[in-house]
Image (tube, rainbow, N blue to C red):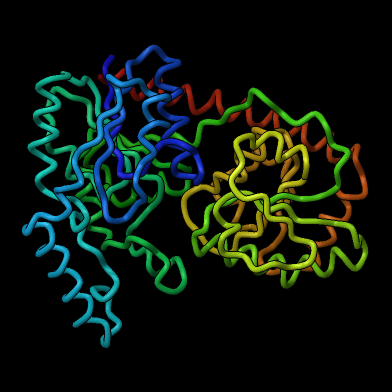
Length: 394
């Protein structure tokens, strides 16, 4: 089967959770025997793709980058301006409209003709659109093409869930439902959101399936001698708040008892964190498994967020124990928590106590890490089963 993934988010290198999901999804589809094209949709909301990395991953025939000139068309610029003015005028009233973006505000309508032309050339059997903000792209394809919307998160009233103006994209629930109706199948990333989407659809509309993040389970950590911890993340506001909470409230409690303890930071989060004693910034790394071996305790002190926390899943895949806040463990479920210690949000002392306990016991790190990896294997099996069922609809 010929599959096109339509995305404004680059798939590789996998330096953020959403990139990791898209890359893992594309590899899973290829493992199932499908031919996968990656179609990059230009956007003002994401960074430019690394063309060489995408060519290496997908091949010259299967990587298609649509021109960024559509972002400078008068029609698109006027649409963006109208929505900004609307939010500005409503801002003093602090009503929903002051926070909402238009469902299609970030989608240049000229892309539709380009996608229709691609369909004429390639004859895709299935198209997968990443995020509801680009769901208008699905309307470019005929009814005999299976249309899949990969949501990543719920964006209905997102500004109420994520503090400050860091919610990125928020629409009324009715607009999220309108995006769903453009698809034949909607993918939720975790069960709670799947239940929410079903309630919003009220039994009317596309099929709803839960397909979470697919994991690379091929290289679990085997060396648990280090007692340091690791946080892997991009430089978004929720990750920054989590690291600040850990370094200000949890880390001092740990270092009172373990003065040599260090927190390793990996990813673009390093760009936004000030130098602090006990924090080692590794930056971007090519080998995440090696980074986990340097610090085989994953900490996940998230205090805000929706969807599922991909960094927690990646810790399971690496076979290292994780310590997480309740918010950070959202969507994981009890069946896959055997390698995870879940601490109530804001309980810095309990978080520190659990880190110290693991740091002092290599055998506990190894035992919990083994349980985490077993959960990751079972997790992958469950996601692949649903993914196969989705593509049987084509």
